[in-house]
Image (cartoon, rainbow, N blue to C red; front, top):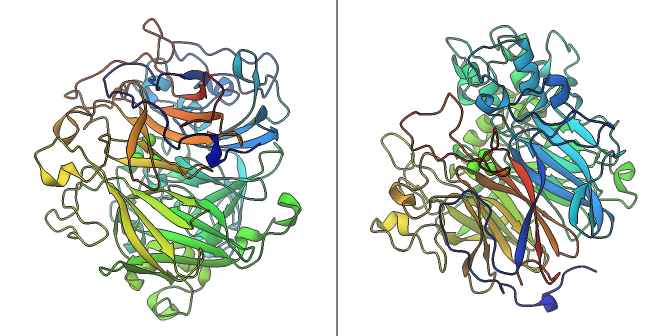
Length: 586
Ligand code: FEO
Ligand code: CA
Ligand code: CA
Ligand code: CA
């Protein structure tokens, strides 16, 4: 059975008080159980290496274990709401925690372990009398990492800008990394999105215009130091490798042998997520934020209709369609501007030799079309019942500062520390070219003196909305990612830890449902079809914890979830259930 409005009140739970604590708090009558921590076995092999609390596992162990820094996630039912697959992202690593002696020494083995701790997990999970557990071993279990062979498809595949020494065809690429949010297709595949890929590439002293527009510069490689042992991450030696990342990757969770596909038709960006929604005529739309200050919001509409028959019938669906970028006008109207070669300024004369080049240089193309530069568009979510689309604009402290763009109607606050959630309805239904937009909420803390930090929240204070999901009952779930350098101070004085909240779609009330442990971000959300089990990820508990952290920051030590005697805090998937077995949120 699927969840329905008749299952109970939309928001029936008691608000969780905000407090600084090293645990996961949920409302009375709810339970949060830790399911899948960094280093836990995936089920890939029988007798997997155990997690060593001093981080002593080597790269080969790590390739069989849960990666670090869990993020976006989806549930694929295998047996109703009792057994299924969880596909989840491991966005990045904290090398200070990943290796026994952190980054004090550096070598090829550490690079290999770092690459193996990135990517995606596919695990089989099932419910028994004691709760949920990972099925060990499982024929579905898989780790996709920064070295997994993948294929590039769509209009940009094979473009000269995607060709490298190792791959003169421009169609074969190794790995995915910085996988932030995600998507799930109606034909049963998982989409994982490559966000801050530029941070993995060492750039030249004098970047060219393309490299500059994407932030590729000297010194970027210092963060992960992969280029010191893997030359493809040194853009001075291999300038095109960086063009082969920043895509949306499609993965078949049912087949661990399948080759993941980077779908270039969806464009290249520091993609946050890719929310897929069916259109009335059988095609799909995919909504994608690009989480960077003053970047854009994108929509792809497929050329073809989804056919019955699962993945086998829809293998090319995401290779053909139209990518557009959003312009939000001051009168509350907006328009999707198509990124199509030969239309408007997107011509050879302007530097785009083909649709492939438009897709590789999505940012430059969007600049020419006059799209709206947003306050860091993170997750998108759609309520299919009403056709309303939502996007979290997490924050933008540079808005209206010095030479940066000033406020506009859609991004109305200067020094925007708290963020907002924008929503729109497309004319004629989902898929329409024009739309009417509004703000669902300007996030903030109603008790603050600074007007721009107060926002207009009805209910519990929050800032930096990031994860977003509309459940089948229409409840809007919001997860926060306030930076650990701002939590508990300044505009976040009353918000020491990150959290998850639920917003009532009709009244706009926002009510706190979960508070995370110290130094974590709450991100990633999935549920069983009956909505009686919810999966949530707790990312980077204990940040800042690595040696590259700012020593002036107040260090709130976390040993979540293993407790005070544990060697390391560990990102983990948490399962939330209601003691009476009811629908989550009621
Ligand atoms: Fe990886 Fe935009 O958060
Ligand atoms: Ca995010
Ligand atoms: Ca974020
Ligand atoms: Ca994060």
